[in-house]
Amino acid sequence: MLSPDFIRDKVQTIIQLPALPAIAEEVVEMVENPKVSASMIGKVISTDQGLTTKVLKIANSAFYGFPKKISTVDFAIIVLGFDALREIVVSISLVSALQKKSDATFDVKKFWDHAIFSGVIARRLARDLGYRVSGEVFVGALLHDMGISILHQYFNTEYRKIIELVQDPNITWRQAEESVLGVTHAEIGGWLAERWNFPPTLVEAVAKHHTPLDAVENPELVSLIHCADVLAVRLSDDPAEFDREAEFNPDVLQRLQLDDPMLMEGYMTTYRNILQSDMRQFESMFTNAKV
Image (cartoon, rainbow, N blue to C red; front, side, top):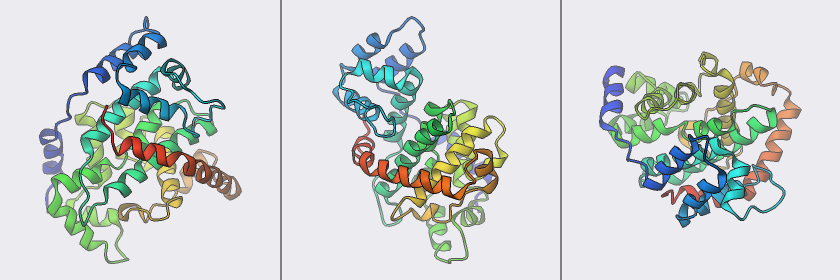
């Protein structure tokens, strides 16, 4: 069995984050400048048709719930907010870096369907519950399972052993990971988030999404991502193998005041309807995620 220290060192040394495209870097820098206006950022984004299309798709998402169609980048930036805009641009770049082709043990479409489901649900859930972390929660939920992609790409022998172990219905995915690796995909994802200089709150959100009660940096953020992850599984017709055993932590439901079964059922019905209208555009955006 590989040691956790070996895995962490490998994750943090061999995995290189491709440089952000120049326009994405410019947008991120502009967002940090308090003298910059939405119009100024809009002019930069509008020079790239692909990025413009992605920003408008997200702004017009049913999960944002804006009553009228948003047809200009300037207005989209106002609706999304500068922080959300930065997170969206960075997310698209990171998704592109992680995407690989499917094979017999890894279904890329299913992986990203779940990631996108989780991201849009987390963002909407944060809004519905009144939490002001919607930008971070979108990114954290979108990338929460990136450790799975790392396992498949960089530890493929061990990944295949995990696949074999979970054929036993009595062995969960995380139990198999612990048996083969001594760590889970959540921890590996957290190490990668550190390597990419994510803020501590997002590192924790990725690393603790299956163990939300261990969160200390921002327990509410981790709780939202945990719930979005499970909701995405519940609303999927064919969940990925690595998430089939996902269950709500009852203490987290209580923390977020979601422990009323009727209330939760109401959210699930609402999100199921919204997902049906949103998923086609989000899927096309992230399965061709090049800024």
